[in-house]
Length: 388
Ligand SMILES: *Cc1c(COP(=O)(O)O)cnc(C)c1O
Image 1 (cartoon, rainbow, N blue to C red):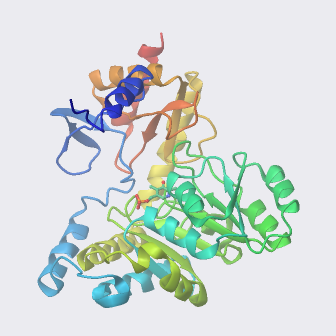
Image 2 (cartoon, helix red, strand yellow):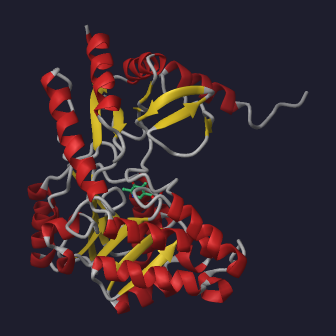
Image 3 (tube, helix red, strand yellow):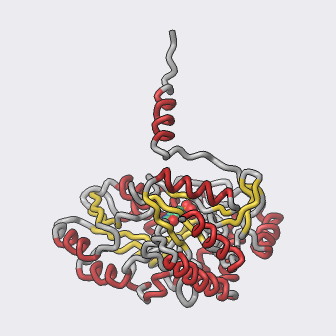
């Protein structure tokens, strides 16, 4: 009698189901927009990170089309071999300009950028200080690096200071944080973190994934908003959220970027992105520059929606951005509410562990620049009805 060595998976899946944690994959049809078709149903879309509507913007798509006849699609090799082309170089220049740094390095995703950068900066004998709510790609980067990891309570600068004081003997120290937290929409205390990093001569790494294109006068992110760009050793961003394309990047000094190009393993050992995607991102950056009203409208509308939800008694946490959590607590109650909203025509993803800590399951409302009150007023009403 033969037994299937994968049989244990059946039991594990049943366990996930019982805990309300089993995820089902859905089918989305058509492009990203304020409305979406989800498993064949027309819904108002509050689930996308395409905050500025660039994932399906005409000029961005056209940039891909005009690059294709010149460079084709695939890039054939790692950027260190023959994979790095003209559009990649142009995009790195534009990113360095936007972020007002000497240099930039493109990765295939933001996930890869975090893994690569952390692993290149610290290793055995070093210590990383990581916010308890940092994104999974930062967590994985910390683990892979083999450095000692100290998790500090979310946005708690005093606790971090204590940890820094107790690790003076370490070879190198790295403080790492999201700038805009991806599930709660709240903001890291960047000036205080910069202050601590300077006091303790620690490196400071800031992941701007959800803030790139949204915050700051030029739209470069929260480091710009707080005026701490020069005090942050390395900044990470993604091209796949507000910029509507694909890819991740690191920016900083020329030396830092040279080091990452030599030592960040996802850069060295992974094929470069198709050049046409770089052409798209360049066009998207231009739109961020030329049409700042996209981000201004978005942030103003987000402020209004948070106020409405709060006055209806919902817990929106400390959100200060286009990411608005409605904190429910238990995963099954959260998923039930998500399902009820679906039936009323709203797609608002329920977020459960391991994406959030136990007891902090939430509905994550993700606003787009082209959502109007015609989209959000019915959502507020629907939530109000479901509450009573
Ligand atoms: C989404 C996200 C990433 C990963 O970016 P991708 O380009 O989607 O791989 C990294 N960091 C944070 C904070 C994110 O929210």
